[in-house]
Length: 188
Image (cartoon, rainbow, N blue to C red; front, side, top):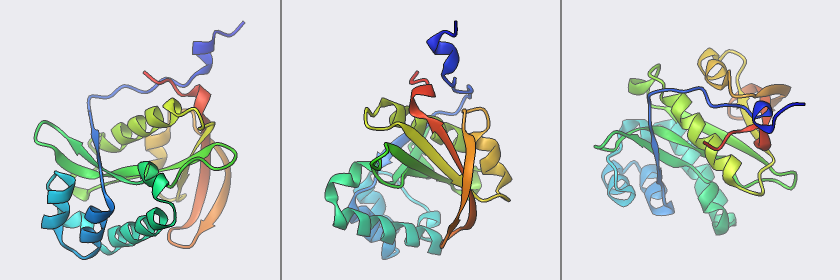
């Protein structure tokens, strides 16, 4: 007989701790306009040029459009990720939207270049998985990763994700689809 805990995916441990900082529509609009000062004041954390790159601006526009279409989904959107007592913002993370009709949520995260290869992506992933597992409507967590993105492939290793297919993304190109059942994620 298999114990329930044996079927769940334990979180690999790591020393990095992160916290998510809500990013309001006002802050996203300021970032879209390239106004780091206003965005940082609104978010309550200092932001760097990483948050006004072309890729980041695409994300803010996309999320603002999502929020305009359904403001109730804002809690599922992107958050700034901060670490340490000073609240240094090291990237952003969140869900692509609320759970779909099958209970699937897709995660996304990005670490600013100065903070890569230090365990922060893994810490972001742990926090996203905890949040997803705590939501009653979530049955599956999905991650989509480009086949040549060795860092992200390594980040999800050990978290119970299984390859289930591939897709073509207009923004990112070919992506491998990975999923893990929410009931296999430990919430601790």
